Image (cartoon, rainbow, N blue to C red; front, side, top):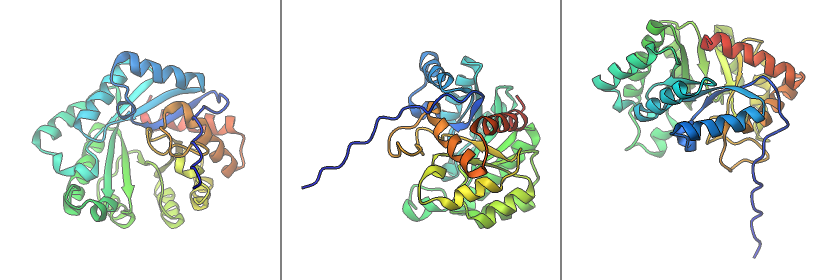
Length: 278
C-alpha cells in the first residue's frame, strides 16, 4: 500500500519589496487580537509585503477586519456580507455596514457578489439567487454612496454578475477578487475598466487560461491577493495560506506578463494605492 507524500511546509518566496496583499482573511487565519495581527504582519513584512487588505465575509468577520485595520497601520479593511450568506443582510446589518463603509480604515465594500456553485452543492445553507442579487445591488449602492471600491466574489456566476454590474450604478473602482472566469469574461471586464485580482489558483498547473487573463490586464487593472487561509499557491497547495506566501503568486504573474517581479510588485502597489485610496 503506497503512502501519500507529506505536503511540504509552506515557506515564503525570496523577499520582494513593495508587495501588497489585496484580499486576505486575517480573522479566518486565526488573527483576532492585536498580537496575532502583528505576528502575521511581521511575517509578511519579512517577505516584502508592505500593505494588506483583510476582508469580512459576514458581519462578525467584518468587525474583526475593521478592528485589525485600526490596530495595525499596515492593514486596511473591506466589509460586507458574502453572497452565500446574503439572507443575513437584515436592517441591523445594513445599518452597521453603512457605518463601517464610512470608516477611514475601510477601503472597500466586499466581498459581495454572486455564487451559484454553493447553490448546487449546499442549497439549504446558501442564499437563493434572488436574495443574492438583492444584497449585491445593496452593496453596490453602498460602494457608490461611500466612495469606496466594490470588491466582488464571483463563483460560477459570470452572466449574472456582469448583467447586474451593467445596469447598476457604477462605483469608481470595481475589483473582481480571486479572478477565476474564462478569457472572454476577462476581456469584457477589462474593457469595462474593472480590476482583476489574482490569487494562488493562478499558480495551479491546469489554470493556463488564468495566466493568459493575467497577461491581458493592463497596468492599473491588476492586483494580487492570497485569499488566505485559502488558495495557497504552488508548490504548497493544500496547506494553510497567509499573506507572507504571496510572493509565489506574484512571481507567476510576472512570468505570465513577461516582466521582472519587482516591476510587477511596483505596478500592483500603485494600483492598490489608487483603488483603495491609501
